[in-house]
Amino acid sequence: MVLGFLYCNVIRKRAGEACELLLYEIGVRSAHRRKNVGRALLDAMYAWMRDHQIGESWVLADNPGAVAFYRACGFAIEEEVPTYMVAEAT
Ligand SMILES: CC(C)(COP(=O)(O)OP(=O)(O)OC[C@H]1O[C@@H](n2cnc3c(N)ncnc32)[C@H](O)[C@@H]1OP(=O)(O)O)[C@@H](O)C(=O)NCCC(=O)NCCS
Image 1: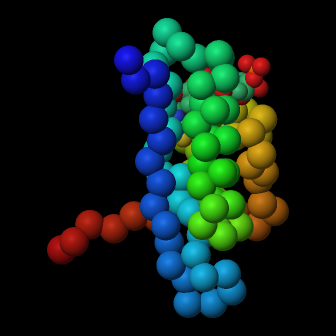
Image 2 (image 1 turned 120 degrees about the horizontal axis):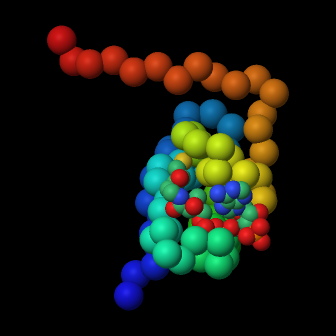
């Protein structure tokens, strides 16, 4: 049975490091939360990053539980936070 998943995208960059990793989505089945499944998923992500020489990952956390989880697993909030904006094709 699948207990959780994560979905990342490699972002190729023009300047600085060649690539960074966008952690686009992560989820653990509600009955299996707080059992270190999410931490194991992020450990696998960090191992993949090391194997592929990608130094940094970023995520948009959309709820307080997620913020606490990411903090517990190595993410930190940067001082200068960009503003999230969206547009629709016209
Ligand atoms: C966020 C999520 C992926 C965490 O997965 P998880 O398997 O429950 O997390 P873990 O058990 O590995 O937690 C590791 C540590 O993170 C912190 N943490 C995790 N969930 C937390 C919560 N809801 N509130 C506070 N701290 C939390 C704790 O420090 C925890 O260690 P502890 O249980 O020993 O205290 C899971 O709660 C989930 O799927 N949530 C719904 C989807 C979601 O919000 N995704 C992120 C969108 S940005």
